[in-house]
Length: 378
Image 1 (cartoon, rainbow, N blue to C red):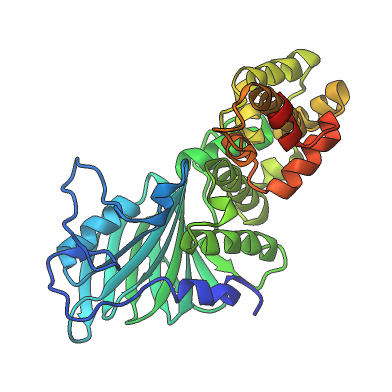
Image 2: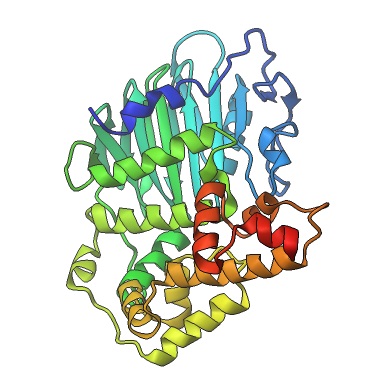
C-alpha cells in the first residue's frame, strides 16, 4: 500500500538498541545516560547531535528507557501528560523514542518491548495523528473505540478524553502532534474568520481513502527529515512552511466539524490596502519565517483572498513576493560582504535558500549575474 507505510525503512532504522542498560535513566542511543528534567525544567536534548552544528536546525532526539516513571515524563514532555500501565510481557519496558520538532509540529517514532496502556485524558493542547507501521494499537477517543493497524490511523482531538487501551508489544507507531493554535490559526487563514467552536476531526482515518492519500504523502516528507539531520527540509524556514502545509492539508483533506465552512469558501473581501499592508510586513521583516497563512491572519483575510489580491496588485503570489524581497537583501549582503570571509552559501542559507543550484539560477535571472560574481566584484 502506497502510504506512509512505504517509508517504514526510515521509521524502523531510527534506533540502535543498547542491551544491558540500567533502568531508572533515559539513555540517548549514543550510550550517554541522561536523567530527565523534573517538571518546570527544560526538556532533555542530545548534546552531540549533528544538527547542533547547523544554525536554525532543531535536533533529532533519540531515547531509550526501561523505567516507567521516566517514560511517562518523557511522553509528557514530547506529547501530553500520561499514565502508563504495563499489561503483559517480560523484561524491561524497552521504550524507544526518536523525536523531532518542527515549530508547532512534533514527529515521534515510538515502540515498547511490552504491551502497555497509556492514559492521556483530555489532550487540550494539540491534535495527534497516530499511524501504526507494525502491530496494532487499540484506542478510545471521546468514548469511541478504534483500532490502529496497517490501513487505519487514529486522529485524537484536543477535546477527546484519550486512552491507548492496548499498545501491543513491539508495535511501532509514528505519532504527529499539531499544536491546537496552529490548526486554529490555519483555519482562520483559510476562511477569514476564527472558529467559534472546537474543530473536531473524525477519529478513524482510512489511509486508503483517495481524498486522504495526498495528505498522507505530505506526512511522509516529515519522516525522513526526522531521521536525517542533513535533510533540506530541516532548515527552520522550510520547517515553518511544512508545518503550515501540514495543517492546511489536514483541514482540507480530513473530515471535521467545520468542513462545510471551508467548502463554502466563507472569505471576506480584501482590498489593495490589505495587500500593500501584507507586502509592507514582509519588506520590514523578510528574515522572519513567514507563511502565507501567517500573513493572511495578520491582515485579517483568507489565504485565497490574499493570493488573489497579490496577483491583482503585484502580479505575484505572496511567496513570490517574499522571495523577491529576500533576493534583494541577498544582493545587498553580497555586495557589502568580504569574499575572503564570507561565502555565497552562507548568505543564501541565512535567507532560507537551501538549494544552491536553484538559488543561483533565480539570482542570475533577477540580476543578470551569478551570485559569486556579485560577491567577488561588490
